[in-house]
Amino acid sequence: MSKPHLLLLPGLVCDARLWQHQATALAERAHVSVADLSQGESISALAANVLAQAPDDSFALAGLSLGGYVALEIVRQAPQRVLALALLDSSARADSEAGRQARLGAMSQAQSDFPAVIASLLPKLLHPDHLGDAALLEVVTAMANSLGREVFVRQQRAILGRIDSRPSLAQISCPTLVLCGREDVITPPAVHEEMAAAIADAQLVVIEACAHLSTLEQPELVSRALECWLQDLQR
Image (cartoon, rainbow, N blue to C red; front, side):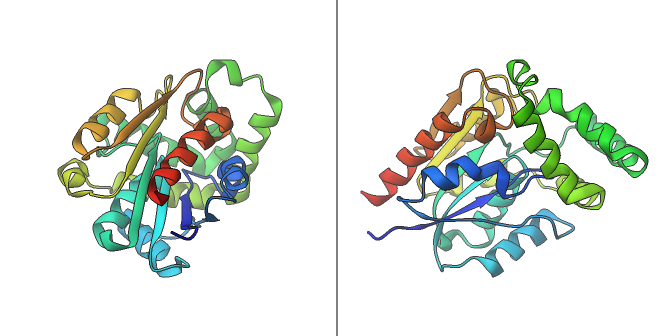
């Protein structure tokens, strides 16, 4: 089999920098590109946008957080196009009521003080050991500032409206990797165990000393897991 195309989907107010290490590490195994999730008012619209811009008829698909929600919708909209699926630090569940209220509060605060919203998110996004990593903090805040308040609110609105994807997990038939950080408090290991159990033959990988932004916090371990996932696809 020739090199597949690998399409990477970023998380909330993240861009290609979220996947910078994996894009380099996997370049010899796949044709790598990162989708733009800054437009679209719903998860279904974001998925349709990605499908319309995808460079190949079929591709491997990996999404982190928001990217995972969109990836699950892409599999629903066009299952025949997805050769393999990787869900990183994401969830198949819809928001709980507490989650909805927290999201609405962040959207409201962003209108008046967007930097404060991003600052308040950092302890949830990163493992405590990484909160002193100035270079890592710079990447995360730079991505958020580049995309800005309007994209943050638009993406949050899309996340708020997402459906419960758990009933459709059993229909996923492509090779699937489910990966998360051990200390991910936004989408904890339990929700990844739930997804992996519901998807036939899914592989579950939990990364130690890692929270929600696994691709940046433990890039080598994540890249290795994705490389094995792609290698299985090419056998």
